[in-house]
Length: 123
Ligand SMILES: [Ca+2]
Image (cartoon, rainbow, N blue to C red):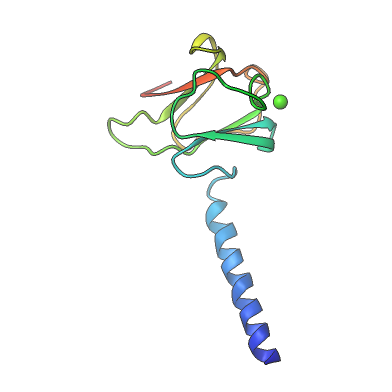
């Protein structure tokens, strides 16, 4: 029994290693198909994620966004870029804009400034 338990543990570790390796393709932990923003730099603090647009960010991410990741689906004719704006309603200055798969660990211009975002064809 001890041997079996050790084997199970080893398999579990191997599976864990596989998951860690595949997710390492992206530096940030953000679900596939979604745009994510974190309250701290380097994808730390609290994460908020969206599959669609949001014209009025709420707590905790409103004006607290410090890192971002675009894990949206990409392809021909798909709005796969994400533009963040400094004001609700997709108005005001753009803060950060992410291409497909792009992750931004920190940005002095966009830091703690986001209030809304939209998916678009290009930045
Ligand atoms: Ca912040």
